[in-house]
Amino acid sequence: MKPSFYDLNYSDLERVLNQNNLNGSAAAVLFNWHYKKKEKAQCYENIAKDSVAFFQNNFDFSLPEIDTVHESKDRTVKFLFKLKDSYKIETVLIPFHNKYSLCLSSQVGCAMNCSFCFTGKQGFKRNLTTNEIVGQFLQAWRWLAKNRLGEERILNIVFMGQGEPLHNFDAVKKACEIFLSQHGASIGVQKITISTAGYMPGLKRWSQEIPGVNLALSLHSPFAEKRNELIPINVKYPLGEVLAYIDKIPLNKKQFITYEYILIKDFNDSSDDAKQLGMILAGKRAYINLIPFNSFPGSDYKCPDVDKIEKFKEVLDTFKIPTLIRGAKGDDVLAACGQLNSKI
Ligand code: SAH
Image (cartoon, rainbow, N blue to C red; front, side, top):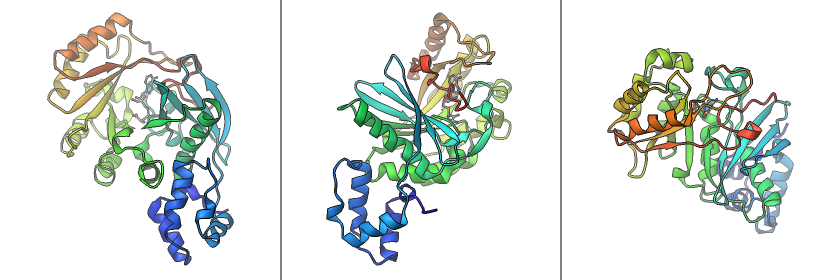
């Protein structure tokens, strides 16, 4: 099988051209055509014919196949993609003011086994390759260009779909490099967010290898016992260690760490929980995203009432931490956080 073109970051592409005695300047043209123009206009005439023939003969340009598309009433779009080995993954386009955030998957299933997450219930199947991650972006973009003409603007990329992105670090890192490249999609570094359950080995690599890309930590409880129950890797990588590590990472001026907190009825939604959360995050460069629990088939957890959610936020406000209550998008098509499970 031919290697995928979409596995190559910019320097890989230059290397391939050089190794094959082809003109290195074709790299910029190829990246621009595939990731910026997204193949809208024919531009191969700008590159030497032998480079074109070389890539056409030696590389694979296929993308994950769109299996189904669900459009929610709020214009959220959920894609189910079929991969070459028939595994399926989901990708979600989340609208805001005629632009979109794209929520990408990084693995088929997930090894973290979080008790509140539908994806975790599938178990871990395999890591996605870089081309499968980049392919979700290109296919979502093409779908927008075809179905919502004039709205094909993906401004943010969040790794909050299926999988633990820091557990598939190499492929996620290379996909980020491709998204960031100024010769291609040129997505701003502050516009990419990697969300993690607190997988320390990946966190250490993130801080050194892709600084500038934003980090979101799924916190969900400041208390060890509760967090162990929600996020089993907390036993191996306890929250205290994760937070201490994050504190040492130099952030640029505009950078914040996002702390995600799922609110589960009568489990982690009391004023005590909020106070303790406020205490451990006070004084940090932190945003808190409160995510009311999204239910899925077979789950015992429930979402708290609106009053309780607002009360929780009020307590956090006293600690002067910017806090947002995240509205569920796309939950009528099971596209909201934690509802992604490719089996249905
Ligand atoms: N593995 C990564 C990214 C995937 S989940 C992580 O753990 O951060 C993206 C966000 O959705 C996380 O904050 C996750 O905790 C949250 N989430 C998962 N299941 C959910 C559910 N049922 N309701 C609400 N949010 C959920």
